[in-house]
Image (tube, rainbow, N blue to C red):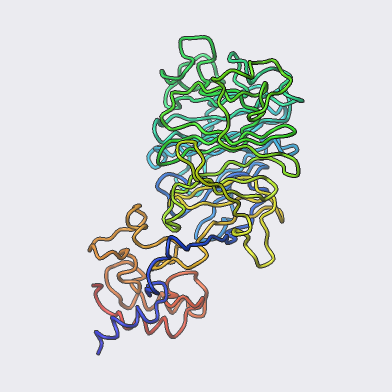
Length: 490
């Protein structure tokens, strides 16, 4: 009888481990969003390599916050508010990227407009012995770029999954209309471009504002043009992303008066693309003569839309998560005023495009009305940053429950195992942490210490074990589950 209880109680009472009809039907899956956190004016969200437990959120005013175990930590990961100039909607702490070897070297990079002059700073910092705290004194400048106006600072940075280089998005310098400095078509300056640099070496030891190397295969190395430039002809590439699987680069270039555009660069590109600003806005010729609008080498966007009634394109991500199988490979992006699209394409050729903002509406009196950025966690799941109500973070999730999901993280168990977020030592297809859920102290056996830990949490809402039955409270059913599993773990 004891063996029967050992088998049945975890299945009958431990809700997350109960298989309720298998996984969501990929053909019928619908999406929604859930509120994750409130953070002041969030402008970006990301994760550290190999870190499945934390999210890092940029606050425009200068704080990097951590979401851990479903809550925002009281103390910021890094506070740069004394260094950051944040005026209007286009200045502030704007970019964050973790070094591909962050787990070993602890380095990460930020992009911000500095006080008092508003120039762009990209700098490296390091984490302390406390993984939730960075060292503000570890700063190492990477690049300083003069900004002629407070607008069109762009600010996105990211490491290429195919090459390990750091990509840096810079706007044309603002001060419009159009590009008064003719920067975006001027290959001798860095504005209006995507840069690509090597952060693990320094080709400019005598220049304190340039601490990086030039990748030897950058497109303008050895010919006319700044060696750092990877692509150009951009107005204000506020948000961009690199597909973690293919290396494809998506660039959301904010338009002037009429057109918003989403640009696409395939992962096998050798760089040098000219996206046409300011002799073109999206696919449309302007009155400016900075380049030949009929030049067939100018790269048109993958998608454009009329600016009237909307605000600014917000580039998102190609979905590479596990929780929504039929979304894999689809690209999600938005307009700042809350219009959200799903785009399916074949190397830049659109197969299907549809609006999904109604589907993603969170309900419960909440709304997604001022999108500032998308974000991606270590699982490949996607998030929306929204400035409504002071700042909110939403996660995009399947509308139907993901099953089986024994550890209640919103990711199917087989995906947890495949991606390396969970181990499966006995090969039974169940994450090891769920094979013996009552082993709270992790010693391989359910005993007196586990009982004491459960009793210490009695009538509490721990948001996970020892709330084995998932009812939001530690009580008698949880105690029965623990007793039923008493002894060595299977």
